[in-house]
Image 1 (cartoon, rainbow, N blue to C red):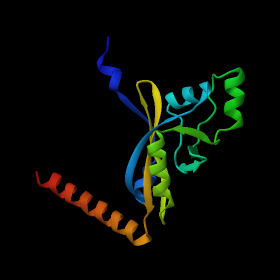
Image 2 (cartoon, rainbow, N blue to C red):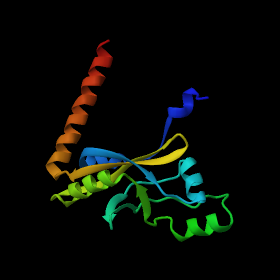
Image 3 (cartoon, helix red, strand yellow):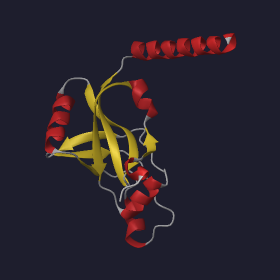
Image 4 (cartoon, helix red, strand yellow):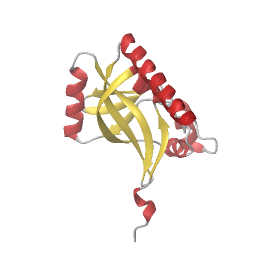
Length: 161
């Protein structure tokens, strides 16, 4: 028996800075290997992706530099494992074709793979990985100018009506 909440997605953490610093292109959905205390901490919404990126090693994808704090109520192994590596490397679960495609993208000059958001889908933690190209300073200025102009237009429309 399925309910309406089976396909619900709850966004736990997002890397908002990623869209400012990078031009995001192709996106992949990956599972993430976590310990018991880590998944509880993620479900509580305590995760930071600010400096997180993806690296391919020996045909496997790894999430590096993602911060998952120790779960307060964890005991025993879950607590010691979480304390040992709040920023430890975590394995990502992707199909082999997706890993090869990601590796090919990273090899191109100026490209990297970054984690853009973490969400819960059917109770499982998923990471959205995006192939990204770093923006130049003038691109960032242009994005800020466009955002400010759009905000001014919206403000003028609200005041008019």
